[in-house]
Amino acid sequence: MDKSHDKVWNSCLAIIKDIVEWQHFKTWFEPIKPVALKDKILTIQVPSQFFYEYLEEHYVNLLAKTLKRELGKEARLEYRIMVDSGNEKNKPLTMDVTGHGFKTYSNNEMDFPLVIHNPVKNPFVIPGLKKMQIDSQLNPIYTFESFVEGDCNRVARRAGKTVAEKPGATSFNPLVIYGGVGLGKTHLAQAVGNEVKRLHPNKVVLYVSSEKFINQFQDHSRNNAINDFIHFYQLIDVLIIDDVQFFNRAEKSQDALFAIFNHLHQSGKQLILSSDKPPKDLEGVQERLLSRFRWGLSADLQTPDYETRIDILEKKMRNDGLEMPREVVKYIAYNIQSNIRELEGALISLLAQSSLNKREIDLDLAKKVLRNFVKTSSKEITIETIQKMVCEYYDVSYEKLLQKTRKREIVQARQITMYLAKIFTKNSLKTIGEHFGGRDHTTVIHSCQTVKDLMDTDNLFRESVIELQQKVQLAAM
Image (cartoon, rainbow, N blue to C red):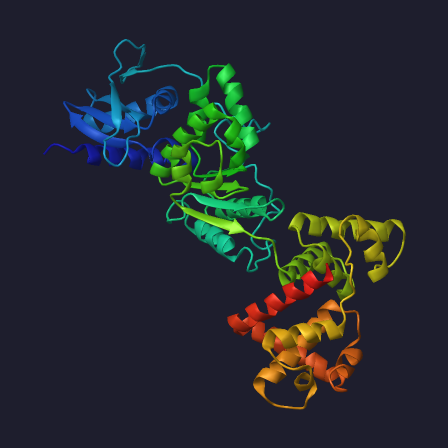
């Protein structure tokens, strides 16, 4: 009984798999598809001309031996090269190569077509790396553990975790992360890449800025090596491109990106893109690219809220082994609201000044050092101001706020007021309690803890408290 082309090729792969390195097998043999077997001529389909040329240069001997083992000495190999990946409606266009007109490789066992070409050229030349090893260009400090989750980034972070667990196998392909300057786009995108490397060590991951991508393309264009450039990027399993908005000034680079995007997406590889705007608002980028950016998930990073800013500062301090008074942390988080980069920059400046001046960090030093970072409040927030805001928000009279009552709405309003007074004023717990009918500091502590607990379990309550926080912040401007 004649063997089928699938059976013959699978038998060849079983042998090849034990001979070549795993990553090389994955890169150069897994994408091959057997399409026909006739008169001991096996036809295999390869993704590109470059792919065919690389096989012929580096693996022709191995292919010949394994195929002759399956089909005998008369075995031959033909290639079907995809020249157009096609689309949903049309089948891919292909070109058959039979080997006529090429030099042949000969020894005692076989005659096989051989074309001598240079091996794949890696745009990321790293001294000491082998030709087919690709440095990921990732910064190892950018991880999910160091990325603080909050309401401002929860969707994007969790989508990134999902992608890292199953790259290329979710509906989040591409994953587009967008947001303003300093909100953590690069951190999150690289965190996905680092997590993929941890969970899937055989995946080839590459991070590249749009600027570097464009410069590489221009270099290859000048050297008439655009195909080498495109084929290199088509080898990647997880491709991360930062700041894609800068492609608006590089029309020809967009053409290359389009070819790379199509190949990777159709091959089940993962793409992660970052931008300062959602895809629909990107100007100067080809519509065919924008439509593909919209295939997956677009997740935004927003300005972190007050609680998240405190969490970011505290995590930074823990990671660096630093200590700082709580009131100073709250002061920085309260006054710097623009982005995470400025938040961390202010912390570093404060620490530097403390070290250089050999002075303990306190609120006075923080105010002095951060004068160049923040716009200081024009008004001092008082307990009375906060009480008035909460009373107006909940439509409760000031007198009722001070009464000894167990009515839930009154008790809750009073607890929130105490919580906000502790955050936004410099008053002691004892002083705050005295402003609520002479209550002591233990009541204030209990109220603040109750508010925190409710914010963790009751989303509506949490939203109300956050809205009041924002109102107090605006009143201080």
